[in-house]
Image 1 (cartoon, rainbow, N blue to C red):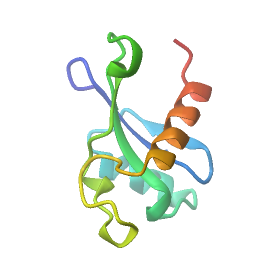
Image 2: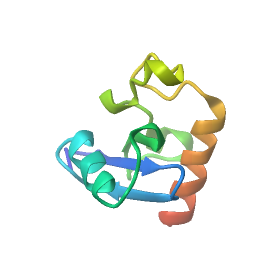
Image 3: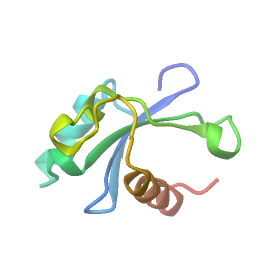
Image 4: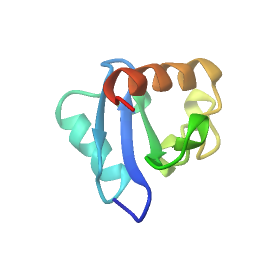
Length: 94
């Protein structure tokens, strides 16, 4: 945990998440060891103390996927973002 933020990587195909690593890349490597593919992994930051949509931040270097049309550190595709939110809502009880 970095101050008030927790790093996580979500695999939108498998519906699973790795959480609380030093780098998103470390978490992605952990998921890759379980068979996750790069194109399905997305990095997020979780701020447990914040409310509503503010508690999730879609910002990670692993989100740069130009071949998939994602040219920013965010998650540009609304459908992908919704899948991430759905998985997080299922895995994290607030």
